[in-house]
Amino acid sequence: MAEPPLLYRALRAVVRTLMRVFFRDITVAGRRNVPEAGGGLLVAWHPNGVIDPALILSTFPGQIVFGARHGLLKWPLLGALMRGLGTVPIYRAQDAGTTDPEARRAANEKSLGALADQIAAGSFSALFPEGVSHDDPSLRDVKTGAARLYLRARAEAAASETPPVIVPVGLHYDDKDLFRSDVLVAYHPPLRLGDLPEGDGEETVRALTGRIEAALVEAVRPTEDWQTHRLMHRAYALMRAEDDVRDGVDSGPATFEDRTRGFRMVWHGYQARRDSHPQEIEALRRDVAAYDRLLRTTGLADADLDRPPEVASPLLVALFLVQLAAVAILLPPVIVLGFVVNLPAFWLLNRAARRFAAAEKDTATVKILGGIVLYPLAWTIAAVLAGLGAARLHDLFPALPDAPLLAGVAVFVLSALGGAMALRWGELVKETSRAVRARFFRRRRRDVIARLQLLRTDLHARFSRLAEGLDLPESVV
Image (cartoon, rainbow, N blue to C red; front, side, top):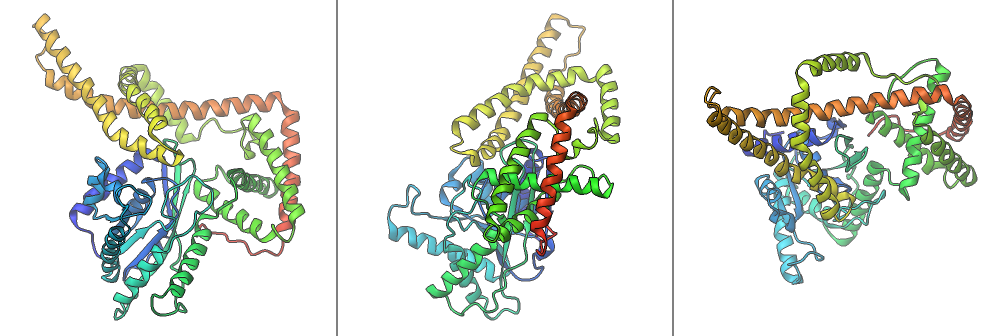
């Protein structure tokens, strides 16, 4: 896979930094499924606005040419970034400014031709075949554009020894609009297209669109509603905790990759048994929901039913003690400065997200794009005020150093650093306080703990019976 040009790598580094700041952990699975030679098309569902392509851009090993609706290229900052990355505009019928059907079709034909040329030449492109971002837990209707693009690129690369591929991408968010949450990007094996009819006729387009949709269903694992989605995650958590008790082991906290893998197993089991055992599935759904409601009232996790939650890991305890000592000596002014300077920007971002985000899918986009402007602006304002204040103090007290520039630079750096420290300190305090509350509850409400343990044991046995004879996947992809 060829090394991307310098400008692309520089802009990708900017996007990676933004993603690393917003998300606490970004896990990538299945990167080996991306062929090292030849070009192809990445297809993914679209649950989180411009964050979806940003994550693919950040984690893909080579260069990608995106196709995006033309209106995004007109946005301040975002448009300039997308143009610098070589994004090709796509003109949708429902967008303003594309009311002339013939002009729109001609513009799209040119755009698809440019993308097909890139794929045929050995590059990768990325499309979201639903054509729109949304907050549903399932796929919207898959459009034919991705199939048409691929077939066109395949025809252009007919003489190539490495024909282009289609790689489905799964985007899995822990809480997609929450700052410092987790996300997993999963690259699935390329579609098997050896028996796909030749040519680009409507029959071939429909057949390929159907295969893309089926592959995205496997990558996304859609559910009929978010309640079902949450209950599947709960099912995995209770099964894992009960397995630990029976095996006499402590697996520790589940990573987001563990939880995504477990969700995939539960989802496949649900699909396999939903029609063959409808009554058992409905009863399980009802009882898991009851267990989930009761567990949530305790503030405990499934594994906390059997052991008191750790206040923190040894590393976090050490970090906590170091921070505590540092706070007693040095950090209070830095943390307070970071809190005071960054609080107005934080408040404005949350207000802007509620005001300008038309749906949940837009919230993270608004926060990131707004944060690029508001946080540095807040640090700059604080730096200017500090410089002016230092100059004024020197006028009043000539014995003080005349260093307004140094004062401004110091406040700018400390505002950014103090904000990061205040954020980390807040995360540690939140984690510790949750563990303390859970320990308190365990001592005061042993009857509720015992009831939950019995419910979990019963649910585990029922899930295990339904899973007998099923070949459930054990990997993320």
